[in-house]
Length: 387
Image (cartoon, rainbow, N blue to C red; front, side, top):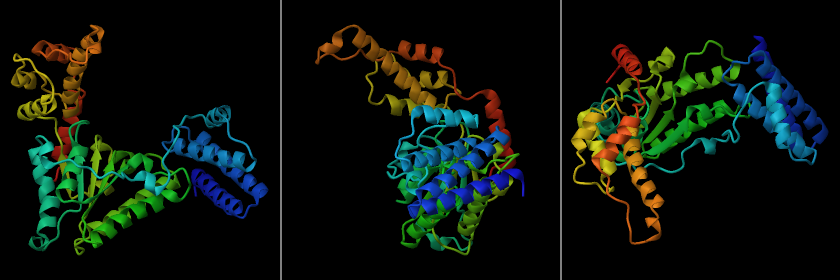
């Protein structure tokens, strides 16, 4: 066993013992065990300063320290928090998600299929893999794909596509951020993964399809040069759960849709479990035109605004870039309206957006996706795509 694994095991044992003693109201001994857990975690961070889970370890240490303060009848101060982070030689964010309920997107998406503009190839592949098997499972004697990987530049509609298909088949939509799977309490991460898939299977057993959507898949299933035991166990749990739903002998409608902007970082063990690997590309001219029509439909436009020309000028822009262009043009006119003092008149309205407004925004804004990035996506797609 490596030094990192020993330290993590020690921290786990100390934490579990501390919780047990805490429940028995043995405050003094519980505090001692919490302190030992903190020491093990901080030693782990100091020995491996570049490790990706250091943020999680520091958050755990802070949680244990807060419990110590609570047992001692005091509240942990901001200075104490800062000191603990400094000792760990790293920074973390407040409010790391830990409980299973907090990992799950509670509000079901209501994205209609027609709102997913363009992406015809991707929509066709997703329909064949998910929509048609749900509508007529009797037509698929060989089963159907359960793992769908959506990859491509950021802001091109991967999440929108997943939400759209969930609405189309009226599925239970379980959406998680892969980075939040790792709990600040040792040992909970694997349990959260198991609960995630168990709830999806239960929904499918009850007759309602389930979609598990994992955003930023590469942060959980990417290639790593150095891993500590906890991360390995979580990745293995995911492999186990995905093997369970990919089994073609089972007819449950449980699907895993993974989204990533960095498909080249994925480990091959996970890539092969996604039978469908679909590129979600930058929008073409027609799609950009449809997007401008969608985003400007509720804006006041001057007669000189040529949406076809805007689609031409925005070549290389992602879907989110185009939305930002429309929003920026609107903010420009509203800003002028307020600065002119007319906003005090409730009957007055901002002027209509002109073609010059859009041209100015497009001149000041560059696409968020570079040509180098596009070449990487195209090369990976040629090597691994599976429509």
